[in-house]
Length: 140
Ligand SMILES: Nc1ncnc2c1ncn2[C@@H]1O[C@H](COP(=O)(O)OP(=O)(O)OP(=O)(O)O)[C@@H](O)[C@H]1O
Ligand SMILES: [Mg+2]
Picture 1 (cartoon, helix red, strand yellow):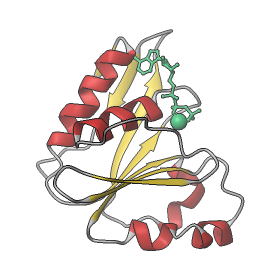
Picture 2 (picture 1 turned 120 degrees about the vertical axis):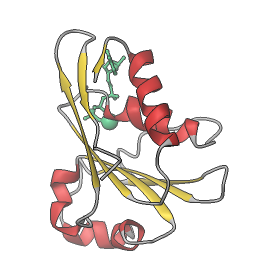
Picture 3 (picture 1 turned 180 degrees about the vertical axis):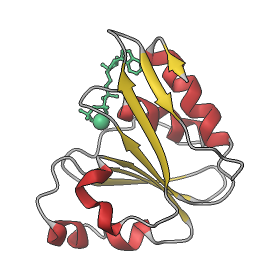
Picture 4 (picture 1 turned 120 degrees about the horizontal axis):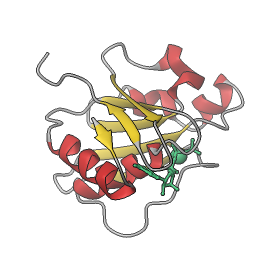
């Protein structure tokens, strides 16, 4: 899909969130400033998260509760130093928790720990405000 604005990316993310039927891990790949956090914010809001959604830049992971009671985890692994730090932050448990939907920015930092059935989203710059958003095929 092509997005021409932050708002359009948010709409795409909200629509995508509504199609997630079972808890899963969703990876968000893309360069700095591609729009991963923008996508994540709208995704979380669409599932009922109220109030400010700050980037887990230093905490690595922020946890929320969805409207339907599913735990939502928003991770940003850009600053992850080593595997030990991931264990300490409880990231392995969260990624493999069957009742948590995880959104992972910079999943490349910890690719070996991600479940094999993670859904991959890729966002790439096409222009100043144009982004290409590749969503996984949800019918397979
Ligand atoms: N079509 C678009 N979709 C999303 N963001 C856009 C778009 N056009 C412009 N932007 C801008 O690009 C920036 C995206 O920032 P965002 O923090 O979401 O990126 P990110 O991929 O999370 O970066 P980082 O790797 O630093 O975490 C914002 O400043 C936003 O306003
Ligand atoms: Mg980000």
